[in-house]
Image (cartoon, rainbow over all chains, first blue to last red; front, top):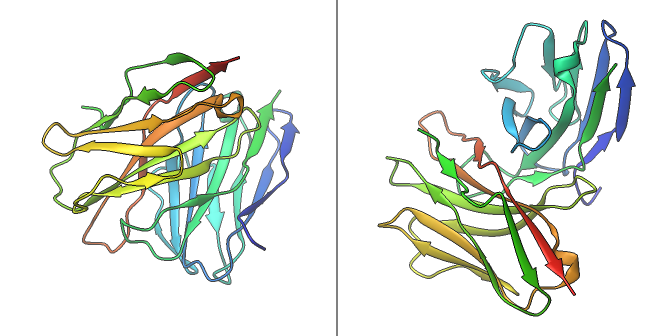
Length: 115
Length: 117
């Protein structure tokens, strides 16, 4: 596709349920990033992939968060045993490479609400 | 210390006027990139403009320009001839170089811009 695609657009889950968020990056983009954006805040880094390799997961808030990109294209962010504090917008971004000068292109995000 | 500071929680401007959104940054890295993104109420993050630390001239993209003052570590966004559709949240972000070969974006808290008729 022309841009980064994320699904679902909205997700409502009960506390304790597992959720999976999908990101389809721009074709050919090596780098893929996940960010978490709390209400009224700027996005915060969660994890980074270069092709299929997860090179940085320092931003994942707990071991309930898990991300994968098995074939170096589509990525899935999974949250197990969801808590209310997980409610946020989850943004995926891709860039051609990982270097500083490359802009990151974002998807529309998944708005996650935990009841 | 915060890496990106946006001191204006909200800004108001009348249609057709120019507006400046402030951004200061903190880094010791000589090579970095500064970005501005627009986030409408629908939630998508739209890339607006980029300024590299070694760029000699201020970046411009249509009605957007970046007032880059390296010594002051500021990268203010100037929107000329504001339009109603410019009403949105605006984020300044920085990407520093790293030995690992990749770098992530660090965002400010954003400025909400409201354009009135």
